[in-house]
Image 1 (tube, rainbow, N blue to C red):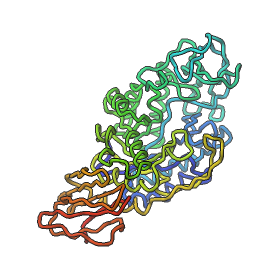
Image 2: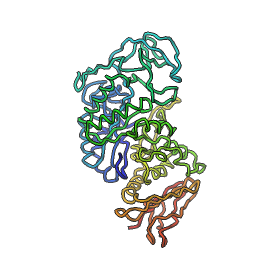
Image 3: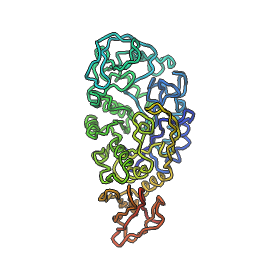
Image 4: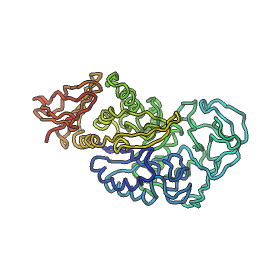
Length: 492
C-alpha cells in the first residue's frame, strides 16, 4: 500500500544521457525531493542490459549484474555502478524516500550462444495462426554470463527456459514468432494479437519450475542486496497474471515486511486492468493507462473536450486504492513506440487532477519535472530534436498544497463541460481547506464550499493575483484563467 498523501516520482526518462550518472544524481537530490513532498522514487532497471552501458534496462541480459561485472562492453550500466546504486538507495531512504526497483521478468536479450531446437512459426499479428511448418531453427537462447563467472547464481539459461523467440539464425530477419518445442503461449495474458504472451527477445516460460524458482531466488537476493521498498513490474500484460501474485507474496514473506508493487499493464481498456487485479487478488497496483489516454485526448481537443468525463472508464474511478495515476512516462514520451504525449498546455491541469485529489497514488514523470532535450528517429525515418519543458515550479506548488491542505472530505463540482473544480475541507491537523478550479476553455469560476467562513484565500499558483473571501457559510466563487488551473489555499 502507498502512504497517505504519498507521491511517487519516475526518476528517469528514456533518453537520460549515459553520462548523467543517474544514481549519483539521485543521491545528490534526494533531500531536496523529500523536502518538496516526493515520498518514493521508481528507478529504472538497475541490471545489465544487452546493450551494456547504453541500455535503458529493458533489454535485460543479467539480473544479477547491477553494474559489477565486465559484460556487454562495460562494467557500469547506463546509470552507474552497483556501489553507486546501493549508495543512492541508502541516501534516499535516509531522507525518507521509499525506493521501487523496476523489474523485467518477461524476456531476456543478448544470449551468449545459439542452440538448435525445433519450433513452429506463428503470425506476429495473430498468435493463433501458424505461418509455416514445425522445423529445426537456430536460436540465441544460451545465457552463460561469462563475466560474472557463476557468482550469486550458477544457473545457465537454455532454450527450454523460454517458450518463444522471434529470430531464427538459419533464416535471418523474418516476420515470425517461433513457439519452441513442447511449449505453449501463457494463459491469463492480454488478448491483443490473439495472445500477447510474446513481446520480444527470448520469452520466459513461466510454466518451467526452474525459471520460477530462479526468479524467486533472485528476488530474495535482490532484496537482501539492495533493501528496496517495492517493485515496478514491466510488461505484466505479457506474462501470466498468477505469476506476479505468487512472486510478490514470496518476496514479502522473505522480506518480512510490506513491499509495494505496481504493474505496467499498458492497455486503455479498463476491464483488462480490472481482470488482472482480480486474478492477482489485489496484491499488485496498476498504472492508470486509461486516465493517461483521457489526458492525451483532452490535451489535443482543447475546449471541445468535456471535462466532466475526464475520469470516465479509468482505474482511479473504479479501483482508486489500486490505481497509480500518471500524466506521461518513458513509453509515452515523444519518439517512443507507445508515443501518446499529453500536450504541454494541459499538463498543469492533468497534474492538478492527480496530485490534489484524494483518489489514487500519483506519479510525477522525471521529464515533466526536470525537462528533457534529446534527438531520435521517428517512425518515418527522419531525425527529430525534442525539447520537453520543465513544470517544476508549478509542480512544487502543487506538492506543497498536497502536503499542507489536501486532507479531509472532498467535494466535486464537475457540472460544466469546460470548467470543473473540487474542494478539500481539511482536518484537525490540516485546517483551512483548499479549492481547485480548472478550465480548458475561457476564464472560469466555480461557486464552491471550502468549509471555512470568512477566510481569505490566495491562488498558490500565482496565476491570479487577487485574493478571494469566503462568506459566512464558507462558500466563495473561485476562479481560474482560460486554459489554466488555480489552487486556492488560506492566506497565512
